[in-house]
Image (cartoon, rainbow, N blue to C red):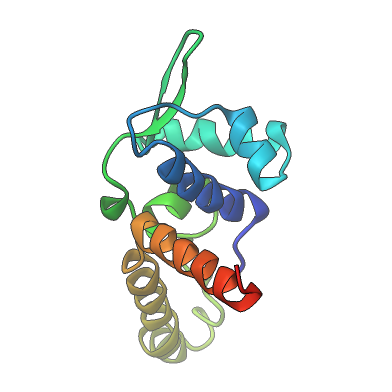
Length: 148
């Protein structure tokens, strides 16, 4: 499985938005792009898809920007990647269905379906809050290591 840059940026952006909007404020795409040092144009594409999937909502105006539509603990990595990745949910193509249907069924049952389940369960078990907490833990660990 390969997650595209858009998927990776979407996850990073949601964690950053969750971090910056705890007090109910909004955050701009430019603010997130600058903080994470990623392309504003590329990030806008991911954010647009997150908005369409009702993970983010926007507010217009001078104090406008983006906020999560629900609590960070209720948004999973799976939710995020499904919103922005085009091929994440694609089933494996048939390999030998016409020549060996029993082998095809065995491959699907023993490998591809099981792999799909494991991937889903893993990605659905990690929330944006989990990533935010882990990020803060890493910051604390880095400060400790640097003697700050």
